[in-house]
Length: 156
Image (tube, rainbow, N blue to C red):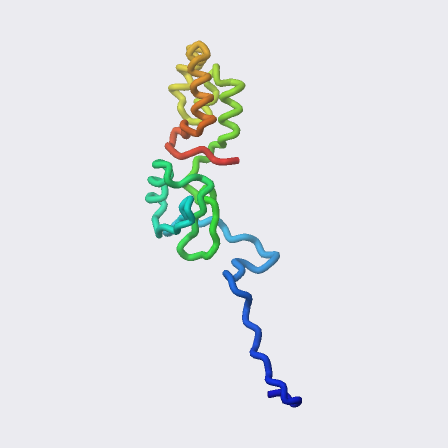
């Protein structure tokens, strides 16, 4: 009790909710390079922990998207799957789409994605008389064509 007979209030506790992940003004932590990760499904369920090869299998099967949220086992911060090295190709979706639209008949899109042999064939046939170029443009636009390393194209 205080001197005036009024009970002392308990010390204030931190506000409910998750603690701040980093102090204001500090640099964000570097992207994780190894370890195990949890990922959040479209319905909000958390699954894991999984290793990077496991996440790659989910990515190739379409269960994990580049925009899906993942969390390293040792951190409380959720990040997009595209920020985990090795899960997404270093090739850009927008660049591939623009190359396919403007230079697809010459096979430049296939060269960019790492399919050198198909790029040469597409160049020699002038994009399969235009039909192959249209098909490739549609496949890139619908994200059905990945880079030669099998990884999905990056969002940027």
